[in-house]
Image (cartoon, rainbow, N blue to C red; front, side):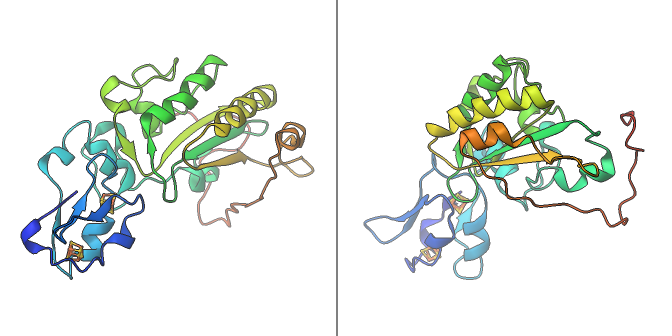
Length: 248
Ligand code: SF4
Ligand code: SF4
C-alpha cells in the first residue's frame, strides 16, 4: 500500500488501523507506509477512504510474488492466483464435518502463524514446514500454503516467496497418534525461537467415549487444550458416511 502525498493532511487517524505497525508519520507530517513491513491487508485504505482517500495499491502489489501478501492478508481481496483461489484467508475447519475431511482415528493439526497482529515472513513459515517435512509430515494439498511450495515433500518455497510477508499463514496436515506426538515435539521446539505468534488447532472427529487428544505429550510440552466444538446441527449434510474416505 502507498499514500498519495497530496491527499494526506496529517491527521494520524489511519495509524491505529495497521495491524503490523507499517504506517508512520514522516518529519513533514505526511503519512508513510513501510513497504517491506506492509502485508497489504487493506485496512488502512478502508479506514481512511472517507477521511482522505490517500491510500492506494501500486501495480507491483498486484503482481507475483508481492500479490501473495494481499491474497493471504486481505479478506476483501479477490485473488488472481490459481494457488490461492478462495476469497479471504480462513482455514477449512468449519466445513470438516460436511466435507468428510476426517475419519475416526485421524487427527488434524493446523498451525496458524502471524495472527492477529504480528504478521509472518515465509522464511519463518519455511522453518516449520521444512522441519515437519523431515519427520515425514505430508501437508494438506488443498490449502494455499502447500500450493505455493515448490517442493511439498521437503516443505520448501520458491526463493521469491521467501521474501514475502503476510498477516497470517496456515500450515495444515493430517496425522495419526505416533505422528502427532513427533509433530508436536517439533512444533513446540520451533515455537521457542519464534518471533511471531502461533496458534495451534487440533482437529479430530470425536466418537462417543473417545478421548479428544492424547494429552501425555501435550502435558509434557506445557500445552493445555481449550476445547471448542464445531457442532454440525444438520444444516450441512455430511457428504460421506464416516466409514470410508470420500472419493474426490
Ligand atoms: S488518515 Fe489520511 S490524512 Fe490522516 S494521516 Fe492517514 S493518510 Fe494522512
Ligand atoms: S495495507 Fe495493511 S499492513 Fe499495509 S499499511 Fe495498510 S493497514 Fe498496514
